[in-house]
Amino acid sequence: AMILQKGGLVAFPTDTLYALGADAFNEKSILRVFEVKNRSLEMALPVLIADCDTMSDLATDLTQEIWDLSDKFWPGPLTIVVKKSPSVSNILTAGQDSLAIRMPDHSLALGIISESCKALTGTSANIFGGPDPISPIIVRDQIGDKIEMVIDGGTCPIGGASTILDLTSECPIILRQGVLPSSDLK
Image (tube, rainbow, N blue to C red; front, side, top):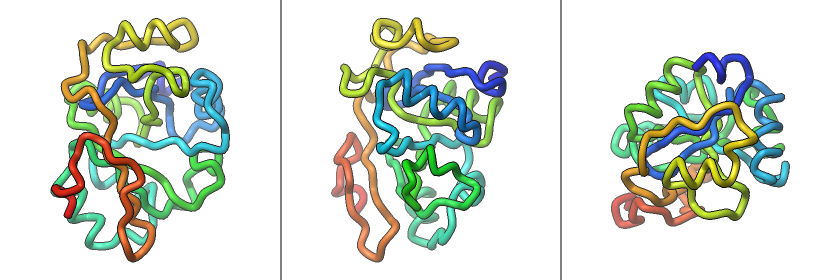
């Protein structure tokens, strides 16, 4: 938590994959995430939160549908895309007016988020396009020498990407089919 509060980067396990965490309100840290991952600045980063109340600090136009989905599927492998708050950096969202938010179902991840910042970047802890970081060994091999800490929490229990659901328009759109089946969302 102290490393994250001071602007450092930490990889930690979630229910799906290891995340590369940085303070989602620290633009220097956010830029380092892009650099470490070798990820284009034109690709927005998702954020992880530890409680639903934080969503109100990050997003606007939160409909009942959004609250209902978060109540049903969080913590868990659902990432919800919502309209971002003006307080959210355009660097984080690649200039878009939306933000992807998730609450992982992993006690270690939730503890790290709670103790460090309101929200952390939640992108996978790997080089862009590299193997899914389901274990600390994969993380260390790809980015371990470029970040301040890799927390060994063993292998991620689900070991696959979250499902991303865009709720910024009237008709919800699945942007990525992950481990949460679309039939569950319907």
